[in-house]
Amino acid sequence: MATKITLLLVLAFTTFCASGQDKIPDGYRLAPTLSITGDFNGDGKPDTLAQFVTDSLGKPLKYIVEAGTYEEDIILYSKLGYQNTFTLNGNVANVDNHVALGLYCLINIGDLNDDKRDEIALVPVLLDFSMLNTCRIYSYCKNSWTQMFSFGINESSFDYEGDTEPLFTNIPQSLEKRNGKWVYIDYCKWMEMDDPKMMLLKVPKCK
Figure 1 (cartoon, rainbow, N blue to C red):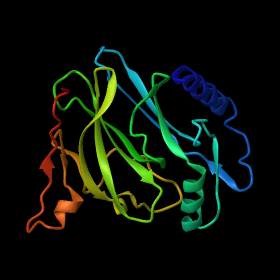
Figure 2: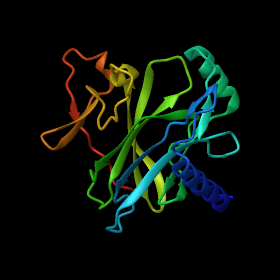
Figure 3: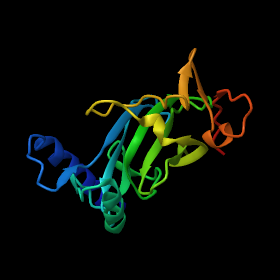
């Protein structure tokens, strides 16, 4: 099954690139996708981690339906079972398989636990009506992606002006690189702090 899904994703990505000038069908929009590079498996060579949107059967989608209002979209997407699927160098990767529609961010945060592998941070676009979300930190442990840490955020960190969505390489006021170090603040705990301050992000080693 994994081989079949990998082939579908490769074919879908090839088709997407080859037909990038296709007109978007009425009632649809482009399915969100993101990718980053880094040495995620520790072999000293560059890797590519990519995110696609697939349907409930794992079929990669170039377009997704657009119902109208945000509320209508959320309800429809949930019924259709849209979800994020990831590949590492073209092979299916077991990263964050929550039912979601794209990512707010997908960030290579470097090797934070000195295991010669780059860690990643991501925030999924959840199909719900809440502004509360979670930033998840993953590391590639023993040929499998493992969530090493997480902290709460408010999705308002990803607000922007204009029509073009920016590519977020940090999470403003929640996960930032300062003086060469990644620092963060947990939104859920921030509301309880008398003097909230960002803390150094520490990632444990793989077990």
